[in-house]
Image (cartoon, rainbow, N blue to C red):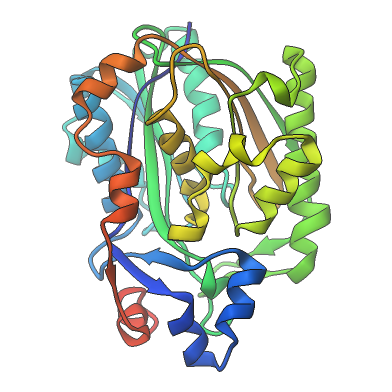
Length: 344
């Protein structure tokens, strides 16, 4: 049995409402909220970035399992907003949480699915006993050009998981990927903000990859949507995951527990993984989860996960759940938002 031993997340406290962004650009907030199914989004404090978010999430995961950080043999952080172009995020996080020097690390980057790609690598390392534990996750302080449609959704947050092959709280039974060269979203070197293909990001990009990856997984493990208690899909906005769930045959009851986008926005590499954290906070032993991420460029990773009895032990020691971070918020105006996200 190999899978998740512990999990931790972090969402910055600052929020900005759709109304405040729309006011700055002369937009219609009601129309935007209806179109994107989002009301507000999280944003980092002026001293927060992918590293600090990952450190806080990692500390929470370690506290929950009471693991010795020196036993962690691999650390991989997925993000598209690593603070350094040439300097790994993983080494900074490892130093901050007290890991030894005997570990392997590399930064992962595949748009919004860098974190799930890291989980797949961690599974291989722990299953083969190359490392005892691997600490992996996805974090972002997502960026967008002022006035772009992305500005209403690009948010900040992250989640981290400890992967191992004993004391497993969520067994990862199987994982598959569906990948292609689909240029729906990109940013060249030295370009400050990403560019996107507008509506092209939907049908040939997000929907094609999510649907195919999820279908491939269910075919491989011989399941149907009815076999799952929860389903979590990447959340670039509120409509996309709702629509893809309907196409695949999942119900609202299966996906709403992991849907955070309307409250905190699209946290990119952290989006699907924060949804998984929210579900792990409430899931019961024996329940089953389907998780499918999406990364522009493009690809999806899909996972079949079963909750074990060990999850009850973690719950006893948890100090802060995903919902606590979602509800702990301070609203800011548009000027403060620009300063905090370094757009002024």
